Length: 172
Image (tube, rainbow, N blue to C red; front, side):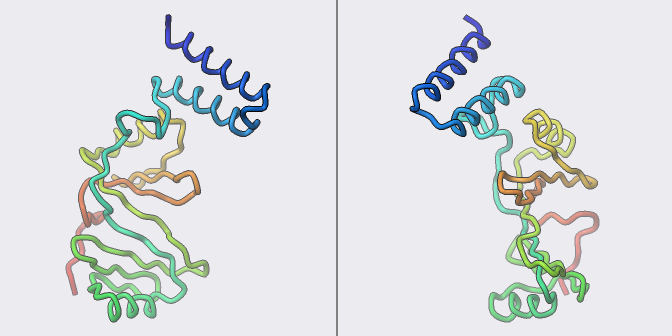
């Protein structure tokens, strides 16, 4: 018996469950989508049990969109003890949080801009290939790779804690 035979039987079970009312149309559609994704990605759907696509070793940094960079800088520095790395106010600034950092970016719509995860054995070319094989659309800027999570939050992947694109900033 082949994997294709298993996939056909799994699809038939999903459709039977939908036909008998044991599963909603949405659940059946998502199940069929997962089966299709698994076949495209070599039998492993994104988020399926087994080996993960990447091994995350920690949170690298966080980027926030804020309405007033200087006000937010002062809040995080004065109340939460972050230290200034680089201040490009009013446009942006970067604060150290232990081995990590946080970027503040001026915006009329405050929100999480992105967060970066440190992944084991990170290689930008390899990350792009893996993400594309999952049927997702990555974005690359130099050695930085970005993808959206299911809710549209931007996730960046990198190789080490507190990494900085280009030349690392010095603490002020």
